[in-house]
Image (cartoon, rainbow, N blue to C red):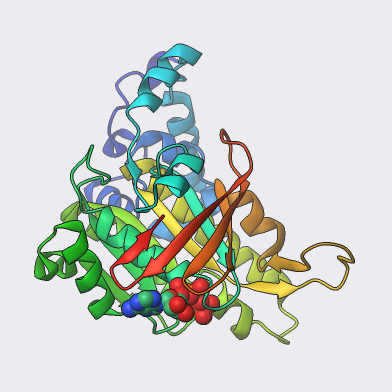
Length: 316
Ligand SMILES: Nc1ncnc2c1ncn2[C@@H]1O[C@H](COP(=O)(O)OP(=O)(O)OP(=O)(O)O)[C@@H](O)[C@H]1O
Ligand SMILES: [Mg+2]
């Protein structure tokens, strides 16, 4: 492996000059390891280099990747300080082990008016709070696919959280995505804005609505799944690379196959189910009350929390 010694930067890889390296960085492939797990075709498509040349670059990147072993206790230490965004409900935070975690995808699904978007607004405000005060001291990228972003709600929530409403609004970058293409592109190109604005939370409200309607009846299930897969993969990679939190909302459909219990299942099937680190199922209860059920979590037990949606935001 002697000849791979000294490969530290993208530019050290065969066939990769400064221009291509810049392109790769822009697209979120800023380190050798990421190139090492790309397919040559992917690299070729992204950079315009030939598949042959891409093969060599990927191979060299693979060789240059050193595996680092961490002990369980080291990971435990690191996780103690992992960023969490408060939901403004103590019960819900407790159920989540402190709040919505960075480096992970949190999904909330449920029927209309169950509070998915409201939780997205609350997180968009709270993410801006200082570390240790329920926030992660960052900006927010809000991808609105349904046209339901409401600055006046942010204003009320920000006031309640003790933030300057104007500043809070300035810290939320909203993209109105009307098509899956725009939704996908926004995430594909997010690296730059994430770095420049210190984005620590990305909200996709809703993850599936456009995919669902656009691909309905097109008979293009395979195509949809492939696009959705790479979309979610990119989200997870942003979360890992920049230590940010991803919050996505999802709709439900009635599943007639379920005879007993609650017949609602989230849209998106296995792809979304596997991709979401933490899944929350939200249900409307009496008046302003909502029941949030923790359906899936890598480290917290299943449970339920009751929250309220009030004019000033979420509370216990
Ligand atoms: N200013 C407000 N004061 C109090 N409650 C509010 C306020 N604005 C919205 N709500 C509550 O939030 C509910 C809507 O929740 P939300 O928009 O999060 O639903 P959703 O789960 O995103 O639904 P959908 O699937 O339609 O997008 C309203 O029914 C209302 O009860
Ligand atoms: Mg909504």
